[in-house]
Image (tube, rainbow, N blue to C red):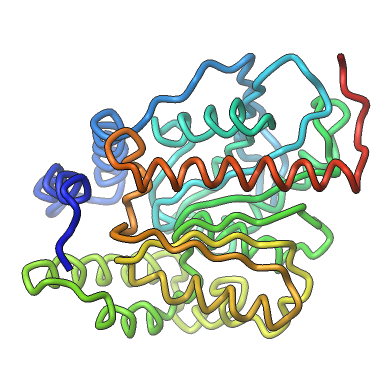
Length: 331
């Protein structure tokens, strides 16, 4: 399959050279700078919001930072808790793409967005990040009235490793009861078996196969760093695809990229959710790679991905508000 010009331009703008031989702190700094550069080139900046508030909230083994984006002065708005990607070992709420995503979803979906600065491996290996997401979600729920949000209407979302963490949080804290789950290019099988099997089905041109194989190797290394013990990869809290009981999941939206080996596990997870009686929806975006959702300013498919999530959030919020009156809104 020939890559679309905007997708190819994104790949061509990447430069792996600085990472060769770098230690993890240097890799994190380089990645932060490079992701910001990529977003500046290809991403759609976020709109102005009414207020941004930072808090430190309790979680297992110590407090973590979270950041709230308020679209307006209105209180009683629904909440969208968002976990960034980065392979469990990199990423931050300070990245430009994280900030822009929070701004867009807050303003255009009419909700308060919460970014979670969960702790990273190897300093904090599995399952610390899962419990950081749980701690943040519980704190927002329990302090909803003080924060001026509706604690009865909370959605959880994440991309890649972040999608893994929010799905695991539902397994680890069944009493969270989010209104919906939004999983973008989710990593749900940390054994790597599902994604490696999927590589052969992507229809890649020969010249692109080494790039994808290298990406799979990097994914495997990230999983090893996160888990420490690879035997943990079959634990559902690490790999939600291995959960035997999914009946407690909320309505789940899964967005996959056609040319992403992780597509297979995301779509299989949707099938298992459906079999468990959970409303599960899958959208596969043609021509997209794992990182293509960042291309919101240059590629119509990425912009449609962006817009689809806004529609999902708006629909979930409307339906949830009908079931849960929540707090009194101000005029």
